[in-house]
Image (cartoon, rainbow, N blue to C red; front, side):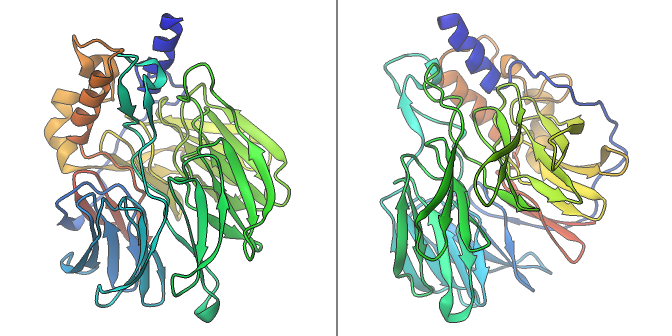
Length: 429
């Protein structure tokens, strides 16, 4: 039994590094670096962009407004906890969630608070002897539970709805003044960013269900069950990803190692892909009948036929993939946990260019293996693999690389992306 637990545990942390992806050469760097802004804490989320400002939250508890041309700070707004959700914008208001349990509305021009809404509080996914790690009686926090639910905005003017999830298991909908419209209870922590489509709101919960609710009332329309992991104490269950909807289908991955295509109207399964126990955490991208998704533990970028689920091709990255995918022209952009940003040419099905964080440039020779990949055994050295403190050590080392967890956002041929080295980068394309 212990051997089986350790096999699963090592798979989750990337020891196996199994992949059917193709090997590719790197012809050039994504260039030039126009500017970078340095926060005093890790940046886990994606930036939100207006015409002249980028908004990004930090583990240091601040929401920052950054000038898009210069990269200079315009203002900062302090919350009572880490800000690891992606902001939402509506007019001159920016909405953000914090680990202090509150969601905030902030004036986008001045950085002053308009209102705050208190949820039941935020907490990490945790447990005793998590995933069979040792000591079995030690309380452990999930080291890969790195962001909270990002708010989504629906409607306009006086009929605005701001929707977000919380660790208390509720999905909340509030009006433009921060007054509760409705709330819906699930049986798990909600990290998924809700998506509105055809008067419904869609999201996933750590209770293993994908939900569709009526956007006006919050009443249940349908729910779809992903896999439950009773054998390994939840290591292979729960939904951390956010849904993507296109052509009447909802696309979402889960920690159960599957990627699902569901009918958005009724929740019926259209197809699913077995990722061989690799978590699927990142939000997918869909265009022209193709869905693009990444996997965590097998380090893959995969293209599928959006209607049939046929796997078209795969490309291997250098580490866990948590970053959402951005599409522009014939290219896909996303980052991995080794601190590398990829530009994939969707025509040639190959890596066209890349960008490395400051941390990756400084520490890759020490932390990564000879293939410049994340390898648990290499980083762990002579430490006992089954110990929780070994995983904590692994993550401390990986954060030196400046992993990409949030996704890139593109505006006017400039790519903006934040990494956990605390930098918001602006790259010319």
